[in-house]
Length: 123
Image (cartoon, rainbow, N blue to C red; front, side, top):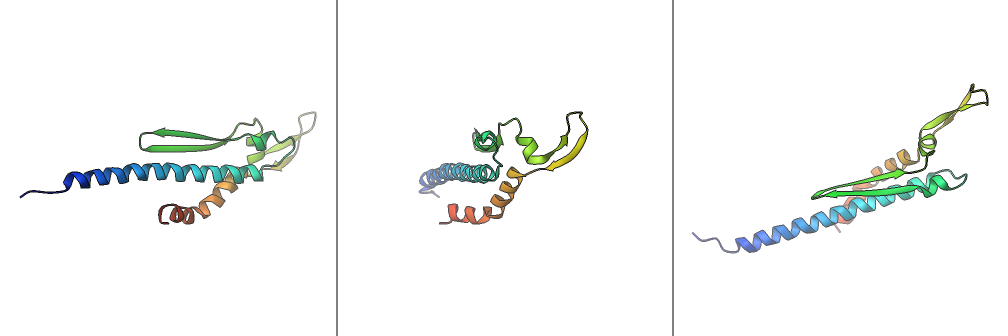
């Protein structure tokens, strides 16, 4: 018994795998950009530094792709999670609730993730 076309089929499967990997990386990058834009737009502005400090870090190792959306501003965690308000004597006078820029951006992106996935891979 002789099998014909096996090498061509193997090459075809390998080309699908390579194309899939590129498409997944592009899709993950689009999702990260969308998350960063939503977080940036919902960041409160006093000087604009925190709004301008949203970054995207892409880590790829072989077939594994990881993308991180983060903020380099030294006060971003205070805006995100909230903080206490103290007077000049160190007495706690209140609490400023967090703006949850990244948390709300992730929630919004997550809600539309299935639609975005279907549009990207099943056009």
